[in-house]
Amino acid sequence: MTIKTSINTAILSDNDIRDLVLPHIDSTDKLNICSNIRGSSNKHLYKIKSESTHTYWLKIYPEQKKFIQERRAYNILKRNKIPYTPELIHSSAESLCYLLLTNCSGTLASELPTDNSALEKSFMHAGYFLNKLHKIKPEIPDTLLPFDALLKRYKSIIKSNIKTGHIEKDYIEKTKVGLDRLENNSYLLERSLCHRDFTPRNWLYSNENHISVIDFEHTMFDITILDIAKLNAHYFSKNHKLKEAFFMGYSGKKEPCKDFNSVLYILTIFYGLQTLSWGKKYNDKVYIDLGYEALTI
Image (cartoon, rainbow, N blue to C red):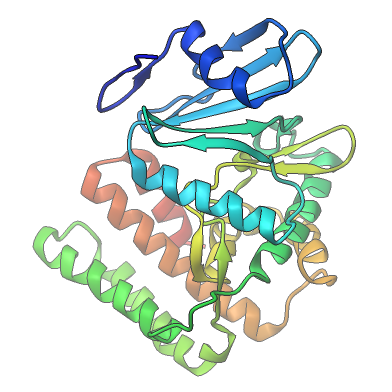
């Protein structure tokens, strides 16, 4: 089969998709294909339904980096029997990079009404999932302590900002003060497998009262509490009930200890600086706004 590709997209006909999928599923049914679901410049996502009601997802990448990262993540999830995730049926990087996944049903949690109890329940399940994910530790010992790794990332942001001057000095100083305080609580810093884009737009809540977590292309071993910083910046700071629900799932308690909260606050500021730096560098208003929101909690 000949597949045409370009740097930003993979152009596939329905017949191409059927040729990719059929050898790997137990079906000879006619396949109905919905193209480019949640599509972006980085990936195309196809929803594929068979007449026997089975549903699959085909995720295609024009570049290898995120494909390799996500495939590795799914293999780790399977090996560790992590719940609430699609199953990887097949992957290939021969003619193009793609993953074939089992269906994950439900409504994106980001689309649930904020006054709906379903949103709180989804956050509780999200906490339970992230707790399981964070129990997976690196097999190879770190060569750099987590705090030192964080400091290295901070210095890289500052070095970049010296050239551009994009980030206000107050936010740089705020982050530096936080990191100075963090050194006293560095015992709470550890590395584990992190989703690294864990927000309600990346998990679905179903009528069966469970979630399905998606989009693992950023997943790698990182500082554990940093994986919660995005939720803290954009959800916990606005709705304390969501924080309580999340931590009930994550640790069995509605509120983490004082030292944990302190570290979470500092890492939220650090996340804000990272996000603002990226947004300013690429003139991305969405990331700029997210960065400022995190820096002003």
